[in-house]
Image 1 (cartoon, rainbow, N blue to C red):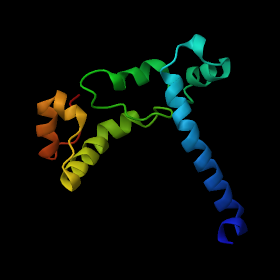
Image 2: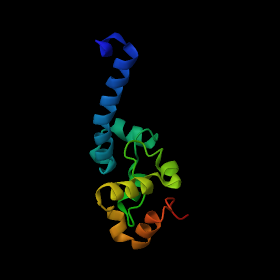
Image 3: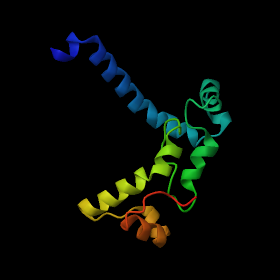
Image 4: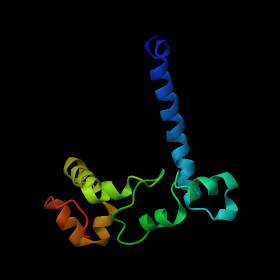
Length: 122
């Protein structure tokens, strides 16, 4: 009953679930050409409301160490600068021994992360 008694809670979970599903579409569209996407998707990308193609492409270029956000990309800079993803990679490694793919391409990134130096070099 709790979820249906509160409009705010119901609305939150409705929007959350819709955005979770749409995030995969936003990501897919960032890999497609303008001609392959509907015009309204191109408008959303041009307006910066969803992840544009060029900024997202940075995530797919060596050393694959940043630009992980797939919805709008607005959080890429603060999360990369704060070292959030390095911290996450370090903790995943500590908890289950799985290494980041970026570490395999950049042994120095691995070494810095394991030393607790989480921010990316400028």
